[in-house]
Image 1 (spheres, rainbow, N blue to C red):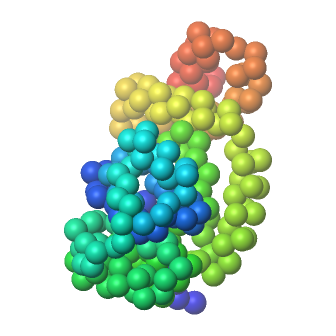
Image 2: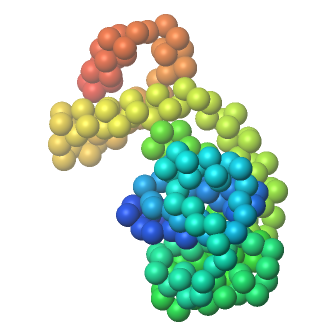
Length: 214
């Protein structure tokens, strides 16, 4: 079986992003982009009130007007979220012509990328995709992941970042001991420790996990 979309993480830092459309679908895409370091411009003659709010909060740049071809060519990431097929086609062609990554919502044939269902716990990202063919299933599996990775995983992931630095400082290129450290970390009952221990106690526990078990 061949696949259409390669699951990779792409940096959008400092990329200019254009969203054409101002309805609820456009809003959902904006909510997906909101936590990333990218400059977002929304172009639409009328927009959802929440999009107006995002503009007032300086989270996005809003231009309440019709799309002007070929302006998508000036952006690195382009999303067309309108119910006008001709407009979506124009946006797609303008963006593709300049090498931009383009997503025409609910039209996989005109998508260089798609939005998977995403669960984030601090810097941990779990994403599920059906290549745009059965997105309701992706959404359902995301809810299952939320149960598998409850909110305390935000804290656990931050702790893992700290612990990795401690392991590398102590064991350097010793891959065997580093692996043993990571195994001990993952085997620890952090759910219980987060309840029973304060931050100082957890720091002590991290240092204990650095040492080989006798």
